[in-house]
Every structure is written in C-alpha cells, then in structure tokens.
Length: 326
Ligand code: GTR
Image (tube, rainbow, N blue to C red; front, side, top):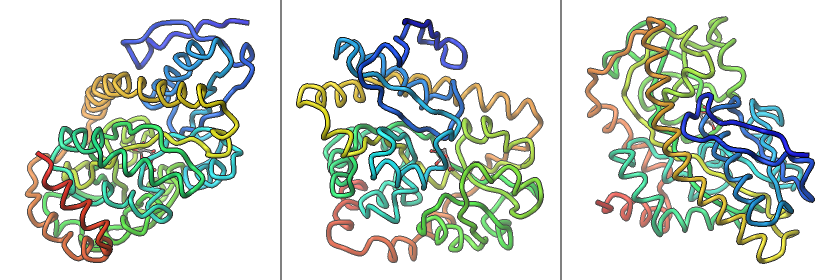
C-alpha cells in the first residue's frame, strides 16, 4: 500500500511520496521529541524515503514524533537496548554517558553556527560519532540545533547579574547544571515535556532553548522574556541502535549511513527556514526579546566549568582542535 505524504506544511521545500511503513519488509522505528513538521522529524522522514529507494523498499523508517516513545533520556536507553532502532536527540542527554559528547556541548565552544558546521562536518565530528559505538549505538549524522538562550516568565534579563536567583530547567546533563550554577542561577534538570507546565505553575522560572523549540513547545506562551545570550550551539545527533544495525547486511548498513548523510543538507535548509518562521511567530506574540547583551561575563564565568569537564588529555586535545578550527 502506498500513501501520499507531503512535506510542504512546515518544511516548505520538500514535496514527494513515501511508501507507507506497511509496504516494507523491515520498518525501523525512530524517536523524536518534536512534533510532526519540525525540521528534525522531516529530515528523518526524508532519510526513510532515501533508504526505501536504496534498498528496493526493504528498509523503511517510521518516525514516532512528539515524544510518542518517551522522553529523550529514556529513549536513549531503549535505543541502546535495541527496543528503538533510531533516535534523533540533542547531544546534551548523552553527556553523562559518552564523554566525547561533552565537548561540543560546552558553552561558547563554538564561535558561530558556521564554526560548528566546520568542526562537526570534519574529522572531529567523525571521532565523536565513532565514540557512540562503545555504548551500543551507531552515530550516523549531526543535525542543527541553532543556538540556545535563556527565557523566563519573570523579567527581562539584560546582564548576567539578572539571572541571579532564577530557576531554570536544563536538559538532563550535569554539565548544564554546572553551567547555570556558574552563571549565578539555579538549575533543575527535567524532561522537555514537563517544562511548559512547570513554568506555568511557577515550579521553575524558565528554561533555555533555540527559536524553533521555544516556539513549537509553546514555552513562549508562558515565558515572555527571551534573552539572546546564545550560550550553547549544541549539535543534535541521529543514532542507531547497534543491535538493530548488526541485523543488517553490509550493503544495508551502508545504505543507512548514506541515507542519514543525505538528510543533513535537507535538514539544514529546513532549519534555516523554521528558525525565521519561529522567530517571527514569537515576536508576533509579543515576547520581549533582549538582543543587546554583553556575552563577555557569560564566557568568563565558564572557566570553572571547562576546568571541571575538560579533564583528560583526549578532551583537552578536542577543545584545542575545535578552538583552532578557522
Ligand atoms: C531541543 C532539542 C531536543 C531536546 C530539547 C530539550 O532543542 O532539539 O532534542 O533536547 O531541546 O531541551 O530537551
């Protein structure tokens, strides 16, 4: 059975047909916390089309979006066990498990999104993808996650001092707890799906994220102040369960890797478009956006965080090489 699926909604640039999962011999289940139409979801759907084409419809992908398979930390464990075949997540929730993932998750490690692309598209990115193997996962590709900034329900943050005493949700990673502490605020690690109600009920004052997530999660409805301090440019990653990968032939494994790689430029185009659309929607809603912020004290405050997390020669070398990348 063939079903029609168009990507035109939020995606804009893609339009085409995909075979429904039932037409395939093997349907790989892929998890994503984001809703249908979000760039990461559309990119993995695109990968599924490419994979079906390359394998004569033997392998397909079904994306379970909107956290249908669970929150990121839990789905990562399930992917390690082979219960979930593919998973698109931020690098953040891997920080406590895979030490190499901490490096691109360090605050202000990248000077720009272009710098991040240059690093992650090259040998350093390959090394970090390879680090997943020892943890029952196969790192397939990096996706974009823009830059993350703080938003809150209380007041405009115009300098680092304004963060003092506020409570922010962070992804479930010790690194991000220490990052927020170092800035003088309080951090609460929490699954993404609990953030909206936690801000609404005052359990936390805010969180931090990029434009598309701030918008698509609806957090902007309950947090009316967004300060573009851009403390993180943390890439997102697409991983496969090693158990699922090992069931495939060498040709199929190659097809999976190629289809994943082919989805990266598609994702980047969708991302660029969605960032603009999300920003426009948030501005339209009347959220106060603070762009005039001195990042220097934020960067200086991160020195002890780097000291705590960049401990081994291997990690120090990664930081040096990233910083030296033009
Ligand atoms: C988003 C990211 C998700 C998730 C979320 C969060 O930007 O795409 O994978 O990590 O942030 O803050 O939990």
